[in-house]
Amino acid sequence: MSILSAIFINTTTVIAGIGWDPEIRGLLTVAVASAGLMGTVWLLLATNVGVRLGSLVALTGFFGWFTIMSLIWWLFGIGYTGQRPSWEFVETVKDPAGAEQVGLEEFINLPDPNCNNQRIFPVAKTNWQFSPPTTGCVPRAIALVLEFDGPSRSAVIAELATVDVAGIRETVETRNALYQLSDPRYLNNNELNEEVTRLINIEETKIDQLSLSNLAATAPEVIRWAAKQNYFQLTDWQLLSTVESGEANNAAAAVINNLSLFPNDPNAATPDFIILDTYQKGGKPKAKSDGVWDRVTNRITNTFRVTHPTNEVVIQSRAVLPKPQVLGQAAPIAEVDPNSQTISVLMRRNLGNLRVTPGLLSLGSGLIFAAFALTLHLRHRKEEEANEKEAASS
Image 1 (cartoon, rainbow, N blue to C red):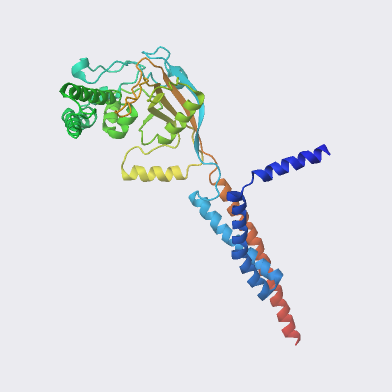
Image 2: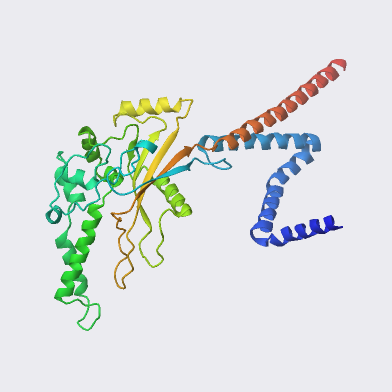
């Protein structure tokens, strides 16, 4: 009796959890649509050629259609698919601020990303002078921008290492002119100058903490120039731009939040951490250049490649200085804590089985369709032989 009671209680619990929308409504919709679409076709066939032959013809058509549909799912990776490719967490490596205090070389064979944490930009205030990165250290992105001497130097400096002071002042003055003198938002000359200085400092901080991945996205020629100058010692790793590393960065951010790798300040308006650079190793080889021939041959060779080399990425992040939200001002920018450690998240690509499920459906449906079609063919042959014998005997 206790077993029956437990079954009854579990059953009623399941039924109680089923709602009209979407569970019952969804089931009724599928049932009515199936009866209305497929049922009417079967009824038409059954009333014309008989129940057995009509059912056989209907099932043959159904599995033929399902074979084509699942084949489309298989080719395009849509519909009823398996697990999509994703980045899986492997481990984290923590490196304190400073030149090779612990380092990443012995763990993931990457140079130290935070050897030089001192302020570089603006040079007029810091008196910074360029020096090639020491062995085992990664150069700062803003240092490469300032030292870059390629043909597009002027454009790169204007885009990545220039503060539009006149534009900032004009914006503040234009906004201030909209307020009356009695408005608490109105700024006098001293307050206006302080606001302009504050906004200029924000822009200078953004420029100073430019990441290498951002630099690779906005000015890839600087990265290529630095590689020719042997400023990078990445061995088998390749620097990814922010455009190329979006999915991996999101997966790493989820891992960092789940593991609580950075302290959380509930009173801060800034995030707990900021993702800086992303490096990738392995995977299918990329084209050696942007030339048409290299891209075409790379696409063909990768298409017919049987094995999939292990694909790994390292996403580096650092803590952010906690800043409160000031009433009437925009949200504070995320400023990297110069004394914080760098946490590198190592992730490995799981290719998943996106097309396995529709592929099996396509093959299974094709076999069932072939079996029904063969049955119809054999039945038709028997009828023809019977008709021929009857005609011969008469």
